[in-house]
Length: 290
Image (cartoon, rainbow, N blue to C red):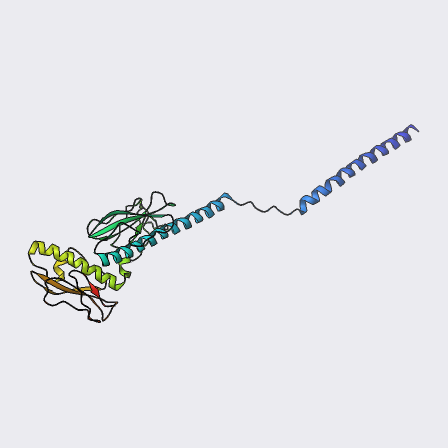
């Protein structure tokens, strides 16, 4: 009987242990099933992508800011030349030439005289950088603040680097970024009448300088080339000249069949324009076909 009693006790112990293990397995299975079926979490955005977007946004702001400066300085060239055509002088008063720079753009004259001017343009979003432009040969071409760039007459140049070029093994590294391609001279898109009037007014000044040294007025424009270069597509011809007077005519390639004329001093015969036969009534003032 003792043996039988021990046997029953052993069987009960085995049964209890087996039940406990079964409960433990059942409790673990739901957790394992949830873990197996839950989809992977979406990857978190990396810091690199955020920096790339920020850099792209900043590049767009820089590009737009430089574009605003360029546009303001091109308009300045056209406005100053138009004012000079009518008045024979330049001015620092932007209100007189009807110019309002783009928003956040400041225009400052670096120098200005009867023979030309230079100006810089800055933007509130571009500290330490600017664009410059000039007209005339009175002084050397101005340079930009950061990269000390300079351009041709009437061409706006800026402290704006180009995108970095593809690496070339044979090319030495340059400490200064390459300049972005600049626009053509704003002087090339002047109204033909404005361009001719400006050149005839400059001819007046050139003749004064020539007369002061030679005692006679120049009969050919080639002798006056050191003072001024005519605008693109403009041809100036001196019709008559002596020690007391002179007369001249200007034509423009984009203004065929028409012209502007000017005279100075006690001229015996005043010149007339090609198309309408217009004749100036005041010495030293150009008059043009309409």
